[in-house]
Length: 466
Image (cartoon, rainbow, N blue to C red; front, side, top):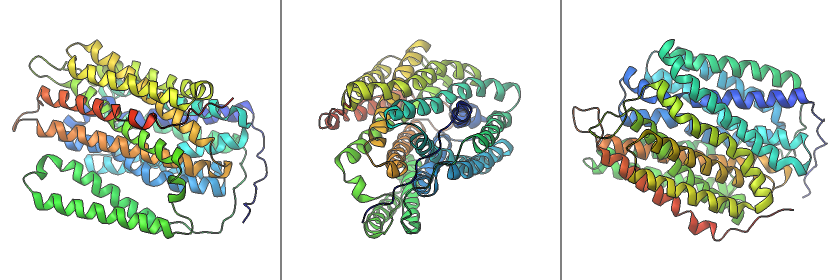
């Protein structure tokens, strides 16, 4: 059956493009405020390292559930229409986080904010609808770079705002910016035409089973330090996880409009991109969690006792490197091919993680290592995202990029929780100081996991498109 082609989208003006860029920047800022202030939040809310790791990734877990739905809705009903509605949920989450008096309410706010992860494929849908095909790669890389670049603002401002005003204002200020940018996009950006009307409903069983899979996986990782003493709990979680995964695969194979199409996932370019994204982001996430903790640590001969403002400044070079990686990854993919970009990124990232395991006694060791990791991760993910987005039909852009983003989220969630579990397991009873071996082990594991991606990059096509 021949798919119905959508009419061309209306051209956009500079003001509309600027509004879209402002939205990417402001949502990136809101997403990034937790990372530099995590040690401060752990002290103020009396959180364990495992609970801190959960706070750092719960937004991403929600994003893993929202992203495929957002991509499918965007392909079907138009990217701008769904984007504006999704950002309303993000704004509500930002306000809940700003007003949160305790950890449970803050977790709820982060759950709602997780809708912003689903905004990324919608931004790609809108970009592809309004720009010529030849400009898509650089444009998608630039939009992704602006989202990451917004993290630079959030990371730099979160510490001073939290320390001089309060932790509540560090969520409130970027939320106000998101509200303003959303109103501008709604007013200035023309509607992009909907995609093919396939008439199929939403795959709610698939969504519920994926939710169960993610919740069970996160629960197992959060309880990992104590599971050795409770083997029955571990067995129950493993059985439940296997049941959810098996059920999800069975449902998606039979669904008329699966949330994540197994046939698309079976395509070599898709499953290789997903495997690489998961492995690379798992390694990155461990560094993202461990580096701020090590800045804050006050151990004998390790750690620097830095405050939230200092941590924000220390992480700033990494945020700048990540923002540059977006457009650079898109340009590199177009000029040299995705395999060259990803291979280079994996080598740089693995070497940086292993170097941090060996040398972490000076602030600049962590600053340089984190910046190289952020740059390499951004190059890899952007190259895979742009090559995937432009290798499928225009009407499937949201679903394809959603697959990569879901895998990215899973990698970040697993890596972050493993980092938290390591610190919890190696923190002596009655102490707030984790052993140095926890950090060394974490960086070593992250480096080894990242290096394993080279086994997959060897099988990738060069992907050079003239």
